[in-house]
Image 1 (spheres, protein in one colour):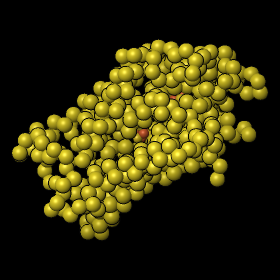
Image 2 (image 1 turned 90 degrees about the horizontal axis):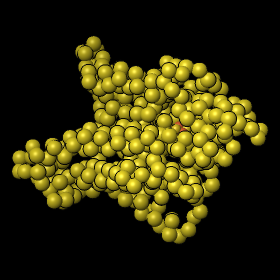
Image 3 (image 1 turned 180 degrees about the vertical axis):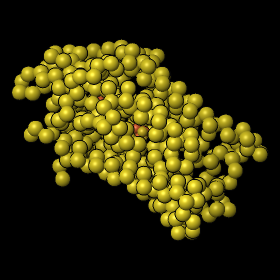
Image 4 (image 1 turned 45 degrees about the vertical axis):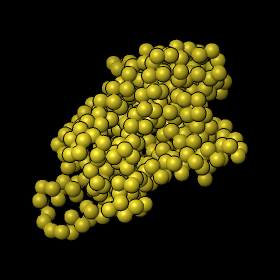
Length: 377
Ligand code: SF4
Ligand code: SF4
């Protein structure tokens, strides 16, 4: 199987050591959050608490600190982000708005609920209750949208409308998983990981089908949950199937792929492995964009010089240069969600020194090519 990164990361002892420690740390953190009983018996659970707060609180706090500090750094100093060694340029208006929204979503929508919940503790803020086994039913898994009217409207109404007008910018402007990927991706280390680690090429594009399979299973399971919830089918069988599915989903999708692989392999495979190859919501948005004729597109112009910087910075492994340049000349082939998993991060646009790329205007319905450059070779 050939998955082609732009230029492979060089291995060295310090790097191997760093990557090993990083992966081990991520694995440990997620075990403590999700499966603490693998480490300590239930009656000693508080030994893994710090200052009376459960590991999930500290994880959310650290996660938010990383996102907030990088986003604030980008906004205040203005020059961080996408650059290719040439003189750094100030953040564009697009990037400024992106990082402002990331800040707002991370703090107010994703961190505050965890933080504020602490004030409801019986013994005060620093006395989290003992561990209660729970499963994560985040909306990105799609099936929770079948069991809650709010998430149903969010996933099946609001997000499709956003996709129609703005493509998958939800992934680079708002989603908490995307917030981490987007901010880590513009740090010095993150840029290296994205450039050298992100899988590219035809094979990696084909592997994205896995996210489609995850989505289909999630939809089937969601429908079963709905049937179960509405009491259309009576009996314990469906309930058992649901319980088994949730347990398997927790272990395979949420813990293994979403957490350990999705974050732990940042240094090896870039920051968007989960988003590209597993996330069911991402694949759903891609399908909505493709079949719902989303207005979103990245549009190359005739100033392209074929430098390939765009492809190097793309965290989703999209061969932007192949849309923009061919046989020694610009080709101006726009692309949207019909042929790519683009999340509208704007990295390719930001880095281009000749300003050869731009997002299509919302009312511009033309020019999106149906074919992918992979189909040409
Ligand atoms: S691909 Fe999924 S997890 Fe990643 S940013 Fe988009 S919605 Fe969030
Ligand atoms: S094609 Fe450009 S805007 Fe789309 S994901 Fe890649 S770098 Fe971001």
